[in-house]
Image (tube, rainbow, N blue to C red; front, top):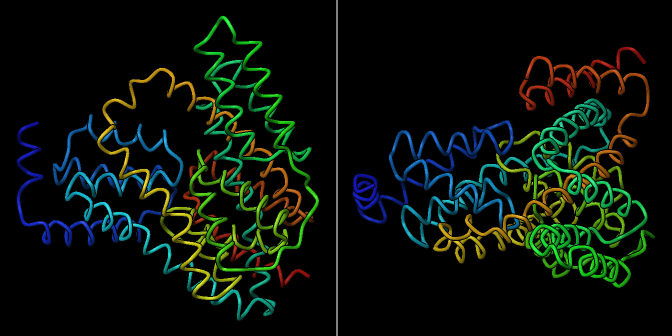
Length: 390
C-alpha cells in the first residue's frame, strides 16, 4: 500500500493531469465492446501497468459505481481521476474518457441529418438494427443471470415488465422495485404489509398514461430531461433505451420510434459509453448546441455524485441496506430492459431478411463470441448487399 501511495504522489499535478488526459482519451477511443471492455482496459492501465492503486481499491470503485446512477465506465474514469489528482483529476479523467465517443457520435449525427434520405444510408440502418436487437438481447440475458438470483427478484423484474406495458412511470418502477426488495430483505416483521402498501400507493399516485404528447421543443427542457435521466438511471446503458423512449417518444413527442431506433443503431458504431446516444439525440433536435447541452445534462449527475461519494467508497460497499436496495434496482432494470427489447424487436424485425440477420448475429454472439462492433459493421454491409436482391 505504501508503494502505491508513493507512486500516486510522484510528479506534479499538471504532469499527472496530462498523463490522465492522454490515457483516458486513448481508452475511450479504442475500447469497443461495452462497459466490461472499458473497465478491463482501465484495470490493466491503472492497476497493473501504472500502479496507481491496489486491486482492492479498484474493486471498491467498481462497487461504488454500481450503487449510484449514471454510466459506470464514465464514473470509473471519474473515480480514478480523483484518486490520481483530486478534483481536477476527476474532471480531466471523465471528460477525456467521454470525448472520443462525443466526437464520433457528433460526426455520425451530422452525416445522418444531411444524408438520411440517401437510399444507401437507409440500407445501412436496415442492416444494423437487427444486429442491435441481438446485441441487446445478449446483454439482457447476461445481466439478467447476474441480477435475478432469487424468486423475489424474479417477481419484481416480471412485475416491472408488465406494469411498464400498462403505462406506469419507469422511474417509479425502478425505485419502487428497489424499495420493495430492500424492505422485504431487511425488515421481516413488516415485509408484506408496509412494503406492499408503499409499492401499491406509489403506483397509484405516479402512474402515467402512455398516450403520446406533443410538447414544444426547448433547449432548457432538453437539458432538464437528460439531467433527470442521468440522475436516476441505474443498470446497463441499455436500460437507457427505456428512459429515452418514455421521454422523447411518448411524453414529449420529439422523436418517432424510427428515429429512436436510428439513434440506438448509431450509438452502437462508436467506442466508449452508450450514453453518447444523448449526443446524437441532442444534435438531431437542435444541432451543435443541442448535442452539447444533452451531453452535459446526462453526464453532470455522474460528476457530482462521484465527487460526493469518492471519500465514502470504503463504507458504501459494506452496507446491507444499500446492497439490497441495489439488488432491487438491478432486478427492476432488467424488467425495463426486457420491455424495450421487445419493442425494438417488433420495430426492427420486419421481414425474413431482418429476422435471418438477427438470428445470425445471435449465433455469432453466443456461439463464437464475435465482438459486437464488428457485428454492427457486418450488419451495415449486409444492409447494403441486400439492395442487389430486391
